[in-house]
Amino acid sequence: MEEEIELYLEDANEHMDKAIQHLNYELSHIRAGKANPAMLDSIKVDYYGTLTPLNQMSSVTTPDARTLMIKPWEKTVLHDIERAIINSDLGLNPQNDGEQVIINIPILTEERRVALVKQVRHEGELGKVSIRNIRKDVNDSLKKLQKDGASEDEVKRAEDRVQKMTDDHVKKVDELLHKKEEEIMTV
Image (cartoon, rainbow, N blue to C red; front, side, top):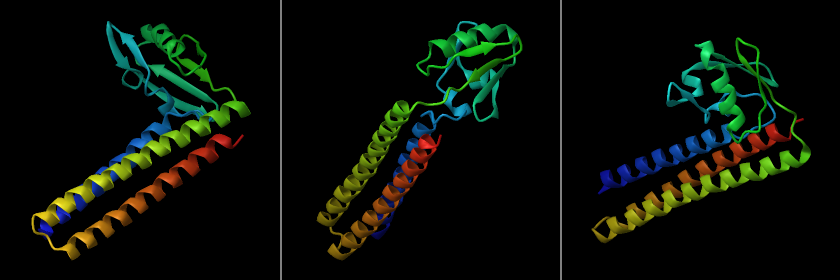
């Protein structure tokens, strides 16, 4: 029974870590007023009839805090890249100089910053809910083990460890949110 409990706890920790990774991924796509190549990860370009991720057909760099430079490996796709960025929901205005696509990131308005902070908090809440659901699932599994013969003390200790794990992961979520909010609100 003890090995089974350990497996549940390891599994829970792994799933909670994945929830944190997912939150980090989602937060990286929220624009903070600074140029970040990850902002363009969701862009897919029509490349010879196939929708191809932008980062698989070009290099994306940030020469300064407000500029993204996209240098495709084939110059023939410059206009396709430009069109894909314009048609995305990012609200960016790309410029093509014949060699690369340049995107100047506009400064965020106060109103837009507040909306982005709300979006960040929403993503954080989804992350916390995910972590709490993992805790609930593990606790339910532990209760079943107790019915199947695991000692009450073992189950109680395991539940305490799951709660500590949950608290640690929720704290990580709060730290990520605080860092992202600070990044957005910094002018």
